Image 1 (cartoon, rainbow, N blue to C red):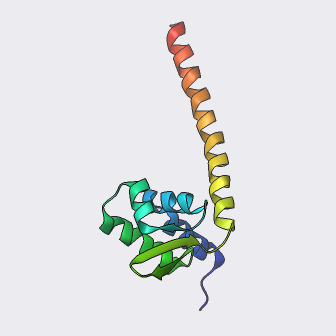
Image 2 (cartoon, rainbow, N blue to C red):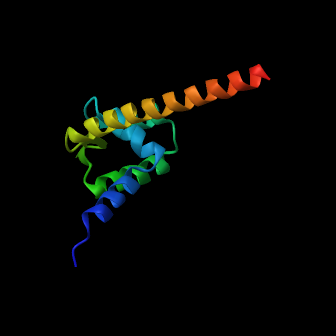
Image 3 (cartoon, rainbow, N blue to C red):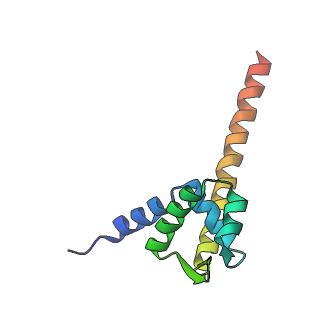
Length: 112
């Protein structure tokens, strides 16, 4: 029995649902990066980064190429960059709304 599209989408978003994975994808938007560069930029334990890279690799959203002892990761397509940009736009709107609410609350408190 095929998986419904909404379930496949939910699984995709669960795969994205970790801060280290999001940060890796953001870093890879600028082009392929060796693991050592990702590790320096993210500042997590190597085992944690390795685990998160494995999740991204299994999902097919990144690929890994080994040259000697160096492993380089890259995005499989440009759509990931578009998705991250859309997420930034959505968050900007959501956070802007929260700031307005916070300002309203502060103004109401000051009026007391």
